Amino acid sequence: MENIISVSNLEKSFKSLHVLKGVSFEVKKGSIFALLGSNGAGKTTIVKILSTLSKPNGGDAKICGYDVTKHASDVRACISLTGQYAAVDEALTGRENLQIIGALNKLKNVNQRADELLAKFRLEDDCKRQVLTYSGGMRRRLDIAMSLMGSPKVLFLDEPTTGLDPQNRIAMWDMVKELANSGTTIFLTTQYLEEAEYLADHIAILHEGKITAEGTPTELKNVLPQQSILLDFNTSEDMEKACTTLKGYTISPVKENDKTIDVSTDGSSVQFADVLTKLNNENIQIARFTQKSPTLEDVFLTLIGEKKEAN
Figure 1 (cartoon, helix red, strand yellow):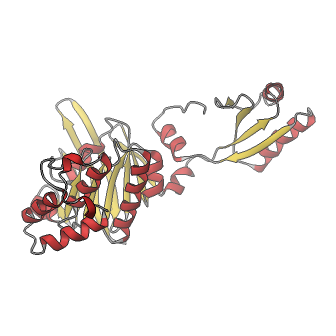
Figure 2 (cartoon, helix red, strand yellow):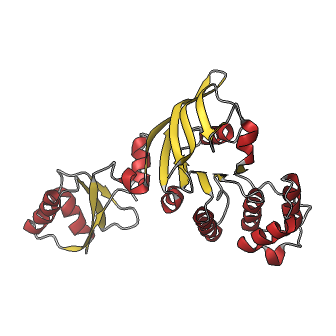
Figure 3 (cartoon, helix red, strand yellow):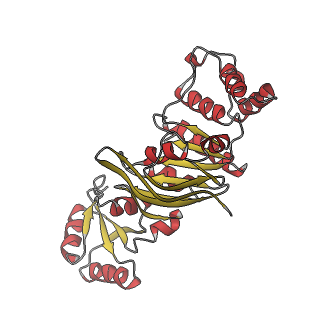
């Protein structure tokens, strides 16, 4: 697939604060690209530059072949942006919000396009109500629908599920998947690791102004070859004896269960067999064991230099 977004050595400073330090990445047409990072990492700064709301201090960025600085109006014609909070007019109805955006985009078929989006986002039954009466999930759905009135080639979703409950978050994920399947390129920023893993075709991790790693969710998880074994015991006494027996390994207790430990290994069958053999030699009974692969959260926390607390 061809690249629809190309970013090279992007730099951005606010007075003495150097936020972006040579950021580079590419986004394939029709894909879902997720930019991960902690608060203050620079995710929103990148979105603002790519959506022409801010200018970089250095580097290049192109969307749909247009330079975001030199050809800002052309870039704006092929993108749309949904921020962290729904930008809807509460005094208007859902339909009226869409109609205003359609008029601003000078669409000829405003009502037809509004009907399509109201149906897609399951808002047709509530479209005549004032947005003031909408739930948080409904407002977020309307906000994204408004962003799609002009049929943009690229949709920026800056932490789109912030403040949503789990049910609405999952519903939003399904809608994002549908948008990508219909050909819209999605640029997603999020702090939710499970969100990026579920949605994204490609993920980039931003830390201290730089991209520290990127790839598919599977490729990123392969960054950490280490695997661990969850061992469940019948009694707390067996668990304590196991900790003594396996003292050569890194062992973490599992908070929710005082009979379970997490034993770190290098992922090899040799170490896996060694753990089981040592326990067997001491007649320590295992109720259950589970091999555990690194998660995207493990990778993220490792790459940004933080340790994950034991579960």
